[in-house]
Image (cartoon, rainbow, N blue to C red; front, side):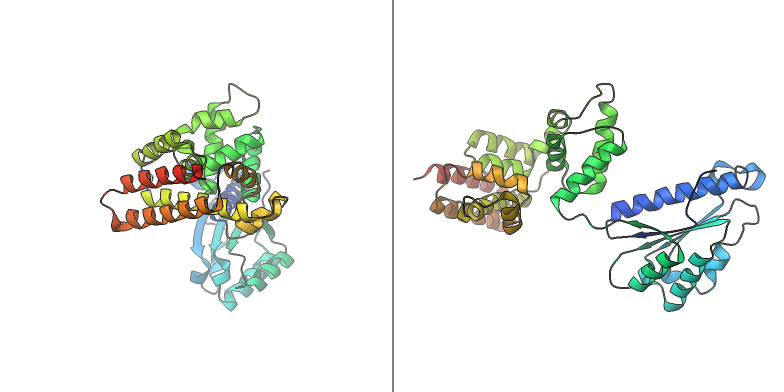
Amino acid sequence: MATYAPVTLVVGEEEFLVDRAVREAIARARAALAEASGGGGFDGGAAGDAGGDLHDLEASALAQGELAALTSPSLFGGGSTVVVRNAQHASKETAAELTRYAGRPSPDAAVILTHAGGAKGKALVTDLAKAGAATIECPKLTRPSERAEFVRAEFRRVGRQADQGAVQALMEAIGGDLRELASAVDQLAADTEAAGGRIGAQVVARYYRGRAEATGFSVADHAVEGRLNEALEQLRWALATGTAPVLITSALATGVRLLGRVGAAPRNAHPNALAAEVGAPPWKIDRIRQQLRGWQPDGVARALQAVAEADAQVKGGAVSPDYALERAIRQIVTYRAAR
């Protein structure tokens, strides 16, 4: 028989991880309940009824005594699965009822709760755990290293391995959205299944070339490195594929500011410590240090002014945002070479 937890508590603010945990808990519960009832509900159990009734509601809408009714055996068999979302908003009476239920759950039901994990309703999390609820933690992944580990775990989840270059390339191509990163890993694993082996940065670049190379940050990297032709080429491609001009000016500003912050730091500063200080991932520090070659402090200041002017023009002061961006890029490259 498939195993499941009678009461599962999913705690955290990471929306994608919470949604996934809830979906998986529902699937386990309904499979187990369907197996226990002999394969389904009424008349042998149609596919949609396998696992019995499914109820999904907000904790704030759960009336006193309603949980007992929802977890009662179904008239047609098959058990019941109840999802209670945002348990932190449960009333005092409802919280007490949920805790009592977790101590003595129905054998024919599964209850799955979500809680944001903050201070509100924190006692309920403790009480449910003490009562025997299985807890799944889904904390917010805010650090680049945490998201990188998530990507590595996603590759393991689909039975593939990826080197550090592939992980970094995928994060640069996709961004920080976990849902999109997970989808990209699934797609990469499926499309490269026949090739087998580890997935490297070249594979990621081949599949996400347009997206990875046409971002504002790619434009900024080329510009601060003095590669005018490549920067303009990426600018035109980014604009052609729908990247908003304001995002490009933002990336240019970030690139130039990081030059100034890293350039002003002690040369022997450790990348990890410096990363925390300037607000960039550790792997980026080494690249910025390489980009600093050819720059003087006054050149960085003038480049930042050029970006500020472009930003104002893009936000309404220029007839052509495209021209304003191209002009800013040309100025950045010029200021880099100035002595």
